[in-house]
Length: 285
Image (cartoon, rainbow, N blue to C red; front, side, top):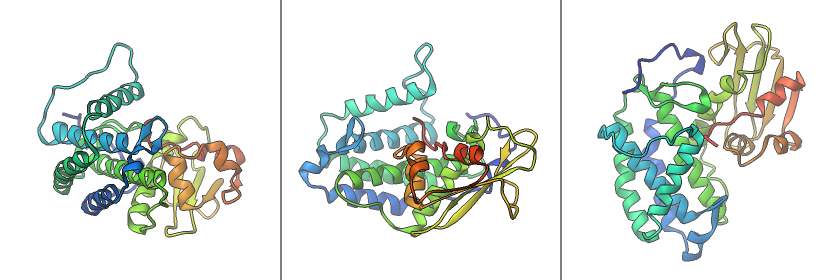
C-alpha cells in the first residue's frame, strides 16, 4: 500500500484520463486486427517487434490488475543493486519472452479481455488516492490521477509506435494527443530540478500547430520548480514545437540534440534554460 500523499500541487492541476481508456482500448484492438502477417515482425522499438510490443502491453495489463485490483504480492523483485530502470526493463523483457510461443491472434484476443478489465479498473479509480510512484515526474507515491494518466500515455504511445512501424502516421485525434502531452509535461519540474534560477523565474514549453495547442509554465520557487503558478507575460525562456515533435521528444523517439536542431523548434530567452526544457523525459528509459 503506498504511503499517504504529501502536497503534490506543484505537479499542476489534476488530469482525468479515465474517460479515455475505453476508446483507446478499442483503437489498439482495431490497429492490431488490421495488421498483415508481415507487420507483426516489423521493428516497433529498438530490439522489439510489433508482436513483442503487443506482448509487453499484455504484460502491463496483467501487472496492473494483479497489483491494483487483486492486491497480489508475489512476483519478481529487485536484484541486488538493480536500479529501477534496469528492473523495469528486465521484467518487461521477461513478459515478452514468456509470450514468444503465443500467436498474434491469441495475443489480441487476450488483450481484448484483460485490457477491458484494466479499463473497468480505471473507470472506478479514486483520483486523489496515493498510487504507484512516477519516477520521471519525481513523485513517489504519486496521486492516482497521475498514475492513471501515465498509464494512458503508455498505451497511446505504444499504439503510435505500432502504427509507425507498419507505415501509418500518428493518430491525429486531438483529445487523446492533448491528454498525452499534458501528462508528459508534468515531467517539467523534475526535468529542471538541477537547473538553478532565482525564485519566480519562469520557463515555458509551448506546443502549437497541428491538432493541439497548449502551453505549460514551470516556475522556480525556493524549494523546487512548480507547475502551480500562473504564467507571467515574459518568461525567462520559452520553447515552441509542433505536437508531433513534443510527444516524440518526451518519449525519446527524438533526442534533445535533434529537437534543438529542428527548424520547427524555436527557443527564446535564456538559452541554457530553454535547452534544459528540451531534455524533458516522460518515460522510464
